[in-house]
Every structure is written in C-alpha cells, then in structure tokens.
Amino acid sequence: MSLLILLTAAVILLCLLLNRISSRLGVPVLLAFLLLGMLFGSDGLLKIPFNDYQLSEQICSTALIFIMFYGGFGTNWRKAQPVFAKSVLLSSVGTILTALLVGLFCWKALHFSLWEGMLVGSVISSTDAASVFSILRSHRLNLKDGTASILEMESGSNDPCAYMLTVVMLTIMSGQADGAALVGLLVSQVVVGILAGALIGWAAVRVLSAFSLPGGGVDTIFVFGIALASYAASSLLGGNGYLSTYIAGILLGNCPLSNKKPMVNFFDGITGLMEMLLFFLLGLLSTPSRMPSIIPSALAIVLFLTFVARPLAVFVLLRPFGCSLRQQALIAWSGLRGAASIVFAITAVVSPAYTNSDIFHIVFFIVLFSIAVQGSLLPLVARRLDMIDDRENVMKTFTDYSEEMPVQFVKLTMGRDHPWTGRPVREIPLLPGLLLVLIRRGEERIVPNGDTVLEEGDCVVLSALSVEDQNAGRLTEMTVDQESEWREKPLAEVKLGKNQLVAAIQREGHFLIPNGRTTLQEGDTLIISHL
Image (cartoon, rainbow, N blue to C red; front, side, top):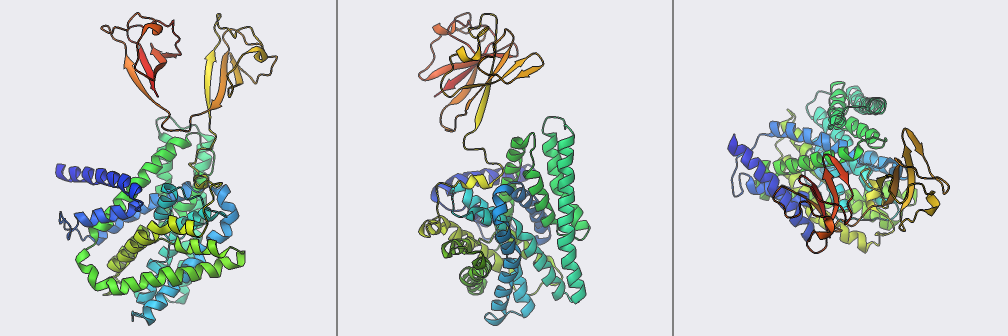
C-alpha cells in the first residue's frame, strides 16, 4: 500500500514538473502526461503491467465528469451567446458529419466493415475540451472574431454527441436495435440529458441563492456533489450524463455565487488532477510495441480527419454565417482530439460488440498525432492566418477571469486623534488613484459626498486598483519573541533588509498599520513586504 501511494505521489510530482517544462518548450502538457504514462507502462522503463480496460473505463469516465462540468462552469455565457449558433452546429451537426466522413473513408479506403468504420468515426468525432482550453490559456491566444469562444463552446459540448454516436454504433453492431429503438435512444439521450442538467443546475442555483451555507468550503462541496448528481441522475433515467453535467456547469458558472473564487480554485485543481490521472492512465494502458501494426491505418485516418473531414465539416457549416476563410481554416485546424476519444474507444473495447480491430491503439495514435502536431502548431497557425488580436483577451471567455482592472478595498477607523476626524471629505488629501467610497457609522452605511464630515469611530472604506504584476512583491511573517532585539523598540529604529517594509502588525488577534513611532511588543507578528 505504501509503495502504491509513493508511486502515485511520484507520478503527480512528475506531471507537475512536466507541466513547467512543456510550457517552456511549447509542447502541449497533455502530451507530456501521455508520454509519461507510456514510460511507466509495460513497454517503458518501469514495465508496469496494466491492461484492465474495465477499471480504466470506470476511472476515466469519472474523470470526464469533472472535466465536462468544469468546461461548462468555466464558459462565459455572455461571451458565448453571439457565437452560440455556430458552436452548437459544430458540436452537433459538425460532429455527425465528421463521424460520417471518417466512417466512409475507413470503409471504402481501409476496408473496415461499414459499422466498424462508423464506430471509429464516432469515437474520434469530437474535439477535446481539455486540450483546447489548455493551449488557449497557456499561450494566451487572443483570437479575432470570437473564435476562442467558438472553440471553447464547441469543444466543451461536442463530447456528448460523440458519446451518443458511439453508443448507437455499438448498439447496431450488437444487433439489438431496430430503427424505432435507435430513434428512442437518441431522443432519450438528448431530451433527458438536457432536462436533467437544466433542472439540477437550476435547483442548485436556487439553493445557493436562497440559503447561506456554512463556511469552510461547504458550498464548494455542494457544487462538487451537484456535478456528480447531474451525471448520475441523467444516466439512470436514460439520458446523456455528460450533456447533463455540462449544462449544469454552465448554469452554476454563470450565476453570481458568493464564494465563486474558492470554487474556481478548487475545480481548477480537481480538473487539473483529473487530466493528469486520465492522460497518464491512458498512456499506461497503451502498449507501444503494438503500434507499428496499426500505424498505416491510423496515420491514414488522422491525415484524412485533419485535412479533409474536419475542414469540410467546418466550411459547410460556417460558410452560411459569412465567416472568413482564415477563421474557418483556424477552426478546422483547432479540432484537437484528446482523452474523450480514447475513453470512448475503451467503451468500445469493453462492449460485447467489440471487433477484432485494435480500435484502442488506432485512436491512441490519432490522439498522439493530434496533440503533438496540431496542438504544437496551433499558435503558429493562428499567427500565420493573421487571427491574433491583442485587443481581445482570451481569458475573458472563461468565467474564472478576473476583470482586467480589479479593485481592492482598504478600511480605516477614525480615532479621536486621527487627522481626518471632524473634516469634510472634500478637505481630505488623498493620494491620486484613491477614492473614499463608503463610511460605516455604527449600523448606518453612508455613500459620502464632498460635504460629508467624518466622525470619531467611523469606519472609512477606500478603493484603489489592485496590483496586477504578480512579481510586484511578496509577504512574509516574523514574530517578535522575548529574546528579539526589536522588542520594545519603535519601528523607526528597526533595521530591515533592503527593499523591506513592515506592512502590518498582528497584535492580540487584531491588525494595525504601523508608523515609525509604533513600538514593537513581545508576541507581535510582523507582516513584512519584500519588493
């Protein structure tokens, strides 16, 4: 048990290290996780034998729940609305067209059986949200004409369609479905998936708005449970669980939540961990020694997908909207395949309808090619197509984006000897960039004007722009103990290091802003600013 925990910790730490290295080299980090899994696998250095497709499907399907939920939670609906029609067409009709074209290519050119070819097409028909989000964020690709929003919404919402197509193909191949049953299956997947996601998401928003949940992250745990419930409830009712959790994520991510920043941090961390786990596990499950036998077919499929099927589907659907050829070309190139395709391939492998074709390794190779080639070249392609617009900000398309001019608030209490006490606001000398925005006088809240006179005991709230430069400085703490040479000395006599300043003092549970006359006492905790 201890060895397994140690191995897990080592994998996580290696993934984090690869995250730093890959960002510097310009290589998509998800590719690094896949390669690390292959390195640990049966043909790698550690030669860990792992071929449990059933267990892998369960783990990967659970990981996809959080990736899909956070894909919806992080989608800025206000930014996505203008491109909603384009994105939905690409994620539905575009996914079906891609599956159909690839399926026909596998049947006619590579001599797969018809339904086996359609299964391959279905499995790889969706673009990968994790890959697209990762590259757009890490490279800060500020794209013209709302292209980033199109890509984010399409990649976040087309996995449910690909999953439905995969289920339909497997049902047909098993010989258990006629025309009416297939129509019923599709309607159930879509209708129940949408209704369940919308109902559960709406109910969660109402609960968070109406009730004040206890602190300590209880509301975050509640949302965590909603992500799981939206998937499970929809699946049990015959709906598409991934579609349901995506819709619930959109509703929750675009409503005003009191503790949204901690939620974003939590789900960002959980999703990052799930992506590490998922891509590493898929790499571990692969057997590189089996790759040479499938490379000819897999390479032919991925080249057809990249240069024929995806561009054709994009051009057919976006041309009526008057989209420029440059934008269509970039969207076509941005159709990255990822973990969802491999997970759906595992679903096919564990299905009773599974055929003799090594669909897992075929899809695995396609994903490797897509992330390595398309993902690495995506920033270059965007620049060559002149689709970069620095007046845009790709981070605005995510709901976890902090506005580019964030405001920070500070408060001061007016003591009897404070120089502002008894003076009207218009006579108070404020530094440029500061604004007195609120006065709290007992239970009363006053929005001041120039004639408002400050009184003893008033709590004054000032606003200023917060520091955007993350390298502007850092804070450390130091406690004054009995042996400290600073004890009982005024702050003006304390010698600090270069570019250091005591920004605050915590004394007996309270904070105070010091000046040179402030005498340090035993037990004081000094908050020191380092520039």
